[in-house]
Amino acid sequence: MPVRGKFDIDLKELQEKLLELGSFAETALSKSIEALETQNIEMALEIIDDDSNANLMYEDINDFAILLIAKQQPVAIDLRRIIVAIKIAANIERIADFAVNIAKSTIRIGSEPLVKPIVHIKEMHKITLEMLKLSLEAFNDEDIIKAKKLADMDDTVDDLYGQTIRDLMQINLQKPEYLPQILQLSFICRYLERAADHITNIAESILFLVKGRQYDLNK
Image 1 (tube, one colour):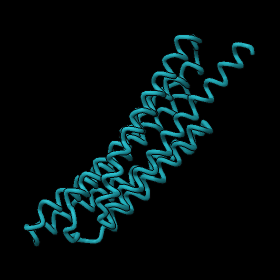
Image 2 (cartoon, rainbow, N blue to C red; image 1 turned 180 degrees about the vertical axis):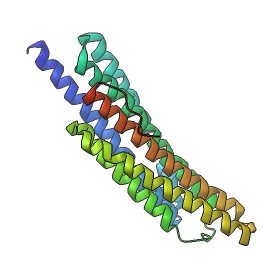
Image 3 (cartoon, rainbow, N blue to C red; image 1 turned 120 degrees about the vertical axis):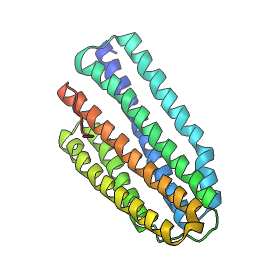
Image 4 (cartoon, one colour; image 1 turned 30 degrees about the horizontal axis):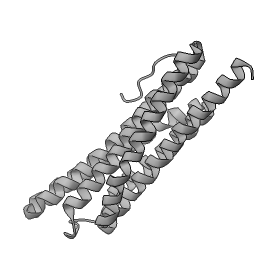
């Protein structure tokens, strides 16, 4: 097989490994909010136990990418594809970590009745999950239109985050005995907000891949 043909196959394998990690993070994030809403401690524990799989996938992507660079010594857009894959993998792995953090907060809340319906938290999660799926599509298709759309979605998550924190602080004034739970719910909001920021980082990486220059979408 020609060298270029083998390299293209390797690049495709790297892309598939990254999409697999992304799919794992999607599932973990969905399960984390389901565990919170249903206060399912067993599910939360499963999310924590499964996180080692994300770490292994991330390490595999890194090792594979470094080997590609060492063997093929790529330049221009081929090198950008590999560097971007490494950067995106790091952001996705952090998103999987946020799912674990949400699961840990769920365990800390335990069976105590929730102080309020988690409507805004679920909406934050819904948009963040949509962002993650769209970012993976944008990476797979090298689609900068989809990538740029992620910045606007991130702004919506930021707005929901601010509103939810204000609501929780108001509840704390009325029901100070629920402070430990309110803190955990605030942390969960923060984890979702940070996950959305990391997806915006993915969008920036896609723009760098296609355009060959750095963009800051988190302003």
